[in-house]
Length: 248
Length: 248
Image (cartoon, rainbow over all chains, first blue to last red; front, side, top):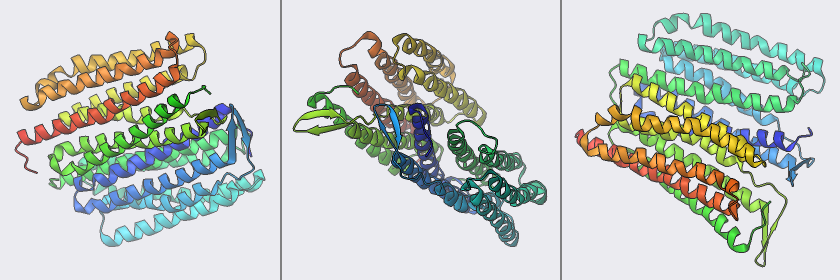
């Protein structure tokens, strides 16, 4: 395990706790607000809450696993020898990343066949992206790490392309009051997701205290991509409900 | 760690347990009463419950961390060497203090642009206040502690000014039956929040058993500022719902 100062240990541990609390609060916010959007948008809001709920569970596990990997005694941090389980992040992403794209498709309220087709292809590409990233994350060798990064970027670029080109006509068909927010949501996906491949490559760049940077970086990216993105989905659902004359 | 008598240890531990139970009960009270206020006030009540929910989580963690930092055997309290994590309070405040101001703005039911503008500026000032307080809280040096206290007071005074001057016309536009309660809510924010900078300075004043005073003081202030303030928000939402002819 990494050697950590007390400051670094505290910063990482507390950022896991912060992320858990944020994800749990976001989940309850989405679900308690189900009644404030029209019925057509409730599946999108249910899934939005599932994403943050699954993330909350994994951050709790990550925090506990991190706590098990070290003991802190009188301000000195010592590795216990227990392994810090990095796989929790990948298990989380494997579940949540396809769901994130599905919530975006669902809030657009397209035709049934269009919804199924877009949700399936984007969801499948997202899962593939995560699966291809994992072997590199656990590889000690930097060339292997880079190889899987490149492979994982192929479905990532396909998703970016779909969000910008494939969804153009679908976005144009949205009510005017929601169109700006949906375009913003696409941008949030692309910008916040771009963060992950950069964080992933930090050990390749030989960044000092890469462990700290990776853990804090992924936590911030997760909060923006899941809770922040979810608030956008909620706002889109509200605007569209209002545009359609829904009164809660 | 501090040397504690059995009496002090019990008082602190049980006040954490009391605060956890109060926050959890308050959360359930707010959410179970969602149906008793008009739709326009439910977002305020959802957020009120989120604040006490997030606080409940952090008091549980504070209680567990405090329990880990000491062993009690035959009435003798011994420090285990495990660190008592003081950062939980700051992580909590970083999330809850902006939300507290947002719930006050939401219950006023202003225009959308006014709500967004006031919620953003007050929320940002509140987060800045917490961030500036933290470096002083963990500093061993008393001058450093005082310096960050002064910096943190700048956004605090801005918030006080906004609540008293900036919201004057918004409060005047509220139905008469709720106006008194909203003014009271502003006072509760200012008085209960004033408690924190006083507690913060206790080590600077060289108060005997400052550790005890700080932990108990913060717990009482949190109960008033979150659960107590939340009950006021609930009462305001009820009065306004009734004034608008809402029948639950």
